[in-house]
Image (tube, rainbow over all chains, first blue to last red):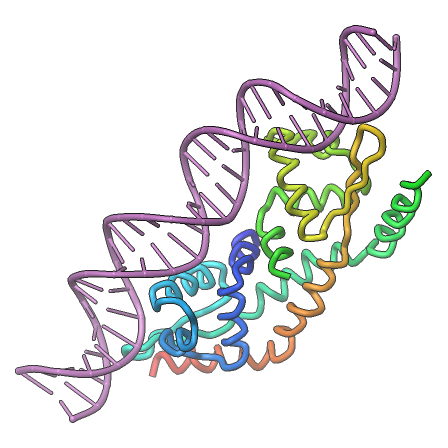
Length: 104
Length: 104
DNA sequence: TTGACATGCAACCATTTGGTTGCTTATTAT
DNA sequence: ATAATAAGCAACCAAATGGTTGCATGTCAA
């Protein structure tokens, strides 16, 4: 879980996920196109995404195809974000109450 | 959005959010209790959470009360995670197809 | 009013991070 | 066979990160 959050913390990596979401199964070089970064930098980002299981890569001859794995993202939503949805209104209400109380 | 992701990337900060989710409106010292960290370290984490609008703090006399703001978390769920839910099955299907094709 | 308590500020430090360059290896196409 | 293409490896670097210590400030209570 921690690895997923860490992987998602970087905008370049999120944009790589976006790209794969747009078109799945791209090669490293394809994923580099148009980015203001060297290929090696992208390689590192992809390694982190793979480590977090957000991307699965399979070699096909001399090229490596990258596939988005949406499961960890889904789990963040289910196991983490949902927790904070419950009691969201309660929290906001309490916050509002306190903010108003400030001027007493 | 980027600030929120960055703020959520650290386990200590997520645990602070958890604590506030458990009991809202805690002081800095309360939030420090039981943590293997100095007060100043917690202060820095809280500053980052405030910067990302995940926590709102109000001074009440000599103490500072911290309130969880669940809105950015909710937005991550809505604006970001949801995007990847759509086409999730399609992506997994494509991945499976490619993994099978590997053995050809 | 003076001491205790809650927080703030700043300098410092080690490690991690995001990036680079240069070179190597493996596969494909001519 | 050989050149071009796709990716991998390793060393290096600057800046950001997560933490510390030491001291200052503001507020409450005796």
